[in-house]
Image (cartoon, rainbow, N blue to C red; front, side):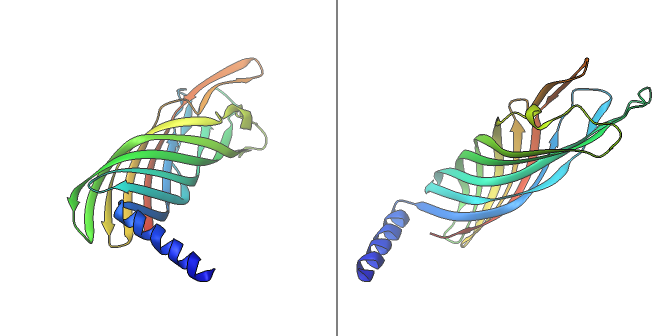
Length: 206
């Protein structure tokens, strides 16, 4: 039974190698900013992380679907000198992200290559947290204000060094993560889209 399992594993790895399939793990850093379409409200870049797997199919031209958990967020601040009830809210968003990238290896060596890639991404929000940093004045955003499914377009550059991968990407949000929020008698039209810079390191398992 052990010999059969090892033989099956060997044949699977050989088939994937012959077909140009690569499987790997990746981890990285996110720097994102949720925009705010309100003059008196500012939003800052926030740091986060990502962790997941990728599959690459193809030689010089390739398709690369990925699956990873991502942590992003924002800090919204009301900067209105005429408003004495200024609020400050921290938003943290965890999501399962699934990009499907089309790529091309500009330099295609055996041990090193340089690539470009482009493709869509769908992001499913798994957890969301909104914290008021000013305990005296609660802000208008709640967890239900955050869109549960969001879409992006990814574009980036990458380098492969033996079994290691390095990627630098930009993600442009295609939909509003936070739209209009009703708080009492006031409507806050955030129209917030998410823009993300990603840096990741990966390792090819197969």
